Image (cartoon, rainbow over all chains, first blue to last red; front, side):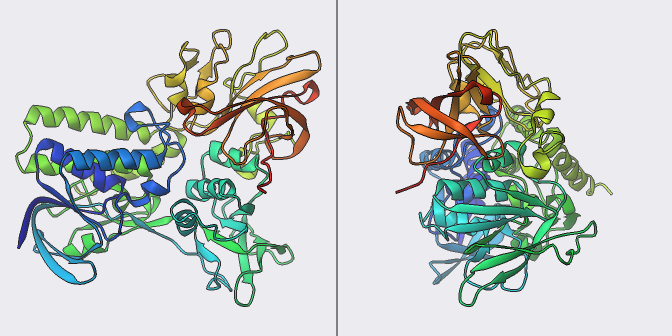
Length: 363
Length: 171
């Protein structure tokens, strides 16, 4: 059996930062990722990040990804790509399949789950036609593979993912015909909606897609106004000439490995639904398993990186790699950064939701 | 169009909405050079504008969700904050570049970039073309990290309305 101090599952912003923080403390770390390339969503994020200097604000996600990979390399962190984590047994054994071929069991003193989240779907007649896809899929196509999914886009959902991907589709040369939002108010940051709006893209709040029309691909979308109970109002339908519909209707934490391992769950509607319970140090109800990033509640890359650092730090500390004083200093610094990101009109709700998760332990 | 709150329904803030904040400061005809105008009216955790300003004209403070406040008397119009703002929410403006023309320098992340001297369609916050403008300068330096800053002049009548230009068609 392969033995490691810490196995990190997932090499996105949370997983990379967890591995880096733990390796800096001296732990022997292995990252496994099912993808062919490390970095998770970072290499799709071509925009400049928010935050402060400590969070690398103003730097584009792709460049943060490159920087983290360089750090991981310098710290000799081992990375197994094309490696699917299939299950966790006895709280300390990770069963992985490498290259869809070789089964390996890794004995890990600590496991950090940074498995991210999956896009939610919205279904409507025609939703299985080619051309309907997650906003994340469209972002992968334009920013990783450099292929436009279509010329005329309709975006469903006005959260930050919906508006950022709309902007990037415009940058990639597509027309974005409209952004529809079922809620009465737009969800994303005003600065994001403003840059999409001044590019001429109309926003329809209180509207949804009724139907996608077409035979072997999308030829148009029917949009309808919703009443206060979110029911379509007959007679308000109108058709948009689009060949692609992108869905940005939120994300659900990828909790399968955590719950399969037996981690206790907590429901957090604000953060995407059922998440593994965890404390401030990112430890779950199973003392050898930590979590970080979207799997612990959907936020964004900046918080995922800080949570990753917290999980890596705590896991390394629990293995005796850090002096108490150094641990406290780092803990306070990371916690300070997390609180800063979880403040203001958008952040406070997430801060309260995180607090509720931590508090759920004591009850 | 400008009589109500629009940021959370149409995507862009109305002038009424902007004027109701103390952070939106539009320089008047007394200003002799372009200065930064910040349209950042939601408390989001962000402060690169403050960090980027070499003359400390922008203040966010220790709470990074505070809204940025600019001291336009201190602003030299260098444009570093324009490229640093992850929200692309800052531009430089001067009301009277000439008697009839206003001046704007705005962030632009689309290709193709306009050419100096080119006539372009200037847009308002809602993406409506309100007038033509003439490109004076296209600044694309390493420090701006792939965000170009386009400098242009346009009719003074549209001083407050213009915030950017229409993207150019790809050939």
